[in-house]
Length: 415
Image 1 (cartoon, rainbow, N blue to C red):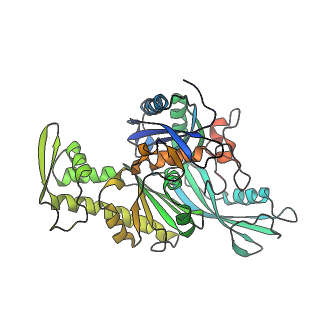
Image 2: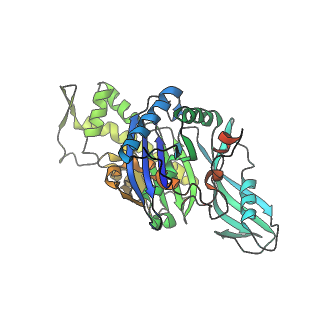
Image 3: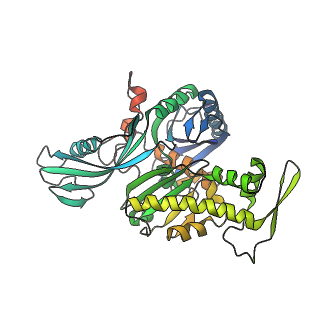
């Protein structure tokens, strides 16, 4: 099996499933050509965090092996996501004196560094710094101050922090799986990269990635990340609610959730009962009971999303609407609930932006994150618009190699 030099690889380490996507970056082409996809069940994580290093590493091994067999190439590194309730986003400002006659790239980096001097949650580290706008000598709302003259530069940034122990445990999983992380990022950024259009990112859009145990939110406006949030609620909560509400076991409840197609439909048009077959046994439930349980939990999710949007003043104010990704986004009718609760346009999306080749294999919303990670990986060796490297330019050599992996991503990160 050969090792290809122009590969873009994404590994989505989810709580219940690990996915790996391998693409080829061809000179002169805008899209990454997908050549391999693989996935494996993950029993080594719980609520987005590592609970068993060996099991988690094995899940990565298996997903990578499947993708390698399909693609015929060997991979050693990838852009990888970090997930979990521990992830936080905080607004911060950084101010520096301009060192020369005009603003240079190093001045922007100094301002961004200054924005990282803030009170962090206990045992947390900074993962990413997303500049939102700049001020030069109190003139605000500047998107790109490079080349401007002034004496004082201030950046308004969104700083994302993660649990240091969670990072260390993920690092151990990757070392065990013998996978080098070219870059680490939040799931929602990857989902946005694969599903949001340039117009949406400029006008304002929220990506809501509903996973098994968490919901990842990212808000983008004027081409810049405004907010990153992780909510401790996901598709598994719907399954658990169904198991309790219908008085059945989890396997049957999961089957009901996957087969239910009448969400938000009129009671006059949907059937009175639905049937599912699990382990060759038929189970029958009242449609109204299923509707009540699923809708209640989805309303809770979107109410929580709305509260997060309100924190940055963007609730009901996103012309690009809401894009839904993740496995739970497959629920027919979920867009209706999202529109009603958020009072915004809503659509379910699967990866489409910037991908060619075997892209039909990604045509489900749960593949948005792994596709976006693959797209981000094509830039792993490039300078950003502000002179920083993708995740600090990759791994440093020596004792600080692993820790440097988890520092900040600078610039617009692919936007």
